[in-house]
Amino acid sequence: MKVIILAGGLGTRISEETYDKPKPMVLIDRFPMIWHLMNIFSIQGFKEFVIATGYKSEVIEHWVNEQSKRNSLNGWDVTILNTGANTQTGGRIARCMKLYENDSIMATYGDGLANINLSALIDFHRSHGKLATVTAVRPPARFGVLRLDNSLVTNFGEKDQSDSGWINGGFFVLEPEVIDYIESDDEPFESGALPKLVSENQLMAYCHSGFWKPMDTLREKIELQKYAQQNIPPWLSGLI
Image (cartoon, rainbow, N blue to C red):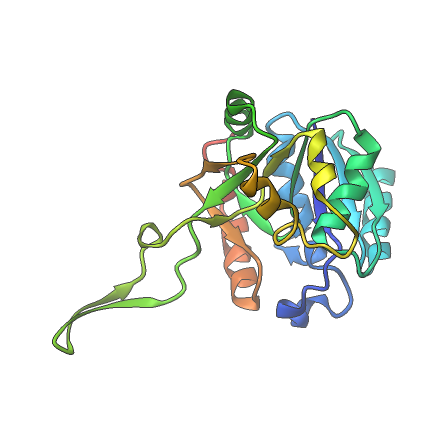
């Protein structure tokens, strides 16, 4: 199954790192974010990638070409598709899906890592027979939680992820018909196709309670950097 990686956004929330490169090319330890993401798929047997580029596409193209010359792509089959600097996530997915019109595909964002069991995800998708599956994750714990009794603080501590609801964590499985739910390049997948799929009862959620972390801020980049230096980083925990 082909894997689409959305790698064309501006990455404005981490502009300290993205003024000269797209967010998936931000280094996490010795390798760019996109390498860690592709490695999650690769160690589970998925090695065919379509990288949907846009902002500073040439940086990703150069990196892939250089890695290919060095035989450093671990047997990955990588296609770069420049989907345009202003194309939204829905448009990027549609352009990539047109390359494989009759195939089920996986798609995910180029700035989030997770130790998702991809075979279990695909089995779940095939079991329900709907057009799309999104991986639901718990949002990162960002704030301390206060417990109060008549304004008296009775407990102060870190927020537990399990106290929060579920959010879109990427790692989609999509049937070919999903392309019909995307109207234009200007349409975000999140506010276009996904609500339409919901309205027709065609979107299911695979709930992942393990590790998941985005790289939206410099702080999160630094945290991922520390994780990457572990013998087995948490986004590979249980997978190798």
